[in-house]
Image (cartoon, rainbow over all chains, first blue to last red; front, top):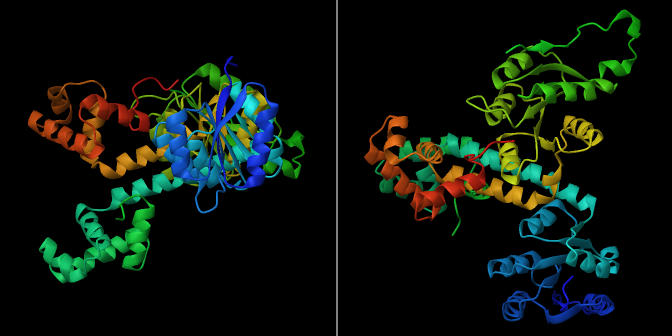
Length: 221
Length: 242
């Protein structure tokens, strides 16, 4: 550990949680809270100006998803250590946090009681993530991989015409407008659309656009 | 390359077949290194609940061996060191396609997150590193047999990076056409535009046009950046798998 105190940013709104974190940091030698932020913008501002070594983030911020706050911090260049506390223990949340880089993930309320120990260990270079959370993230990774492969396979099965029509459907054009835009007959448009629905395993335009977006084939504006 | 079959169709008379024998997990072992195969065979044979059904040293022999297996509960161990035209990715894809009921467990030696992401993306049900406790290795085989995702080894702490790599791969696959992916894969070997053109049997002008479109789609300004992005996604490999 370095001689100068490790500077900590706490991102959280709940007074009890802030209190627990403050107590834990007070009890640790060489750890100093330099800022407390209640939302994303405040967290980013504090991180940018104060450059803390470590951020404690409550994922269950009122009105904001703590994961989005973490994402903003990373996007704005915060490379420090991250200790996350949350009641969410589901694979999707944990994996989402891991993708943004976390060094500890603690589940409330038991995790909060151990936060001082977690901060100390993280500053020492350890990773503090419960095996059950790791396992949940791994299961989610499996699902994620399967979905990604599926997306890729469905995309490969679409002809370029079908892909064009999919984009135009997503823009909200009617079949007639699509026919005029691509200079093909309405009957031809219908055929392409039918094939498209079949390949996406859907039955309506809304489903097609929604499924294509969730597969990452198109972007919704 | 010789394929050894150790599958018995009838239990030996002295084995008095308790019901558990019929539920033995079958393992098909495909890895290029003979010592690895020998070691794993010994480990697996020590356990009463699993047995090696067949082993092979390359992808094609592996598929041949699988075609002869008549067992419902099978785990295919695929060594990521398989190289060439019928490499590990090819094998995993082929097994997924032709033998969809088999579980596939990719295995590597200190593989990095990108290599693992590639294995998972093409269809492996899990990854286990040879650099783990033998007991954990066998445990991984059991787990994946129940189609439960497994990630074991030093790379298990890099779950986030693996997910990122998979996401990038999917993104590239969707954005680039098949032809563009071909050009990028060959470019990653370090060939000049002319050499790429010769390899693919097209004009040099065509290659540079493709490359230009690729840079645009990937939001990069040069070939090196494009190749690095492809490498990070596992779409191309610029190194050995083990």
